[in-house]
Image 1 (cartoon, one colour):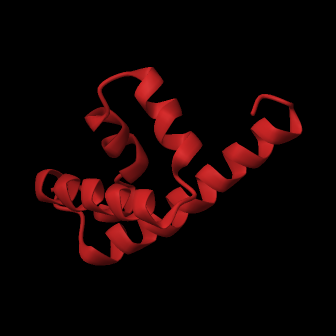
Image 2: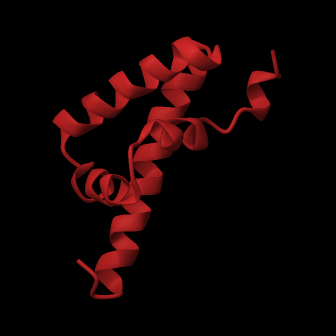
Length: 81
């Protein structure tokens, strides 16, 4: 097993998404608690495939929320909302 510190959790999750439009759809609605929980469930499923530990899953959730917030803020600033 690779060192868990070297695992790119977001990339692993992204591989579970069916297509690019689904990625943008998820990014656009991720700010709600319900969707955050759904993404967390995806992360837990991914955990069973990648052997990422619970701490990494928690960190993934926080990092991903930050990433999405930044993405959405940038889109709004560019008028792409």
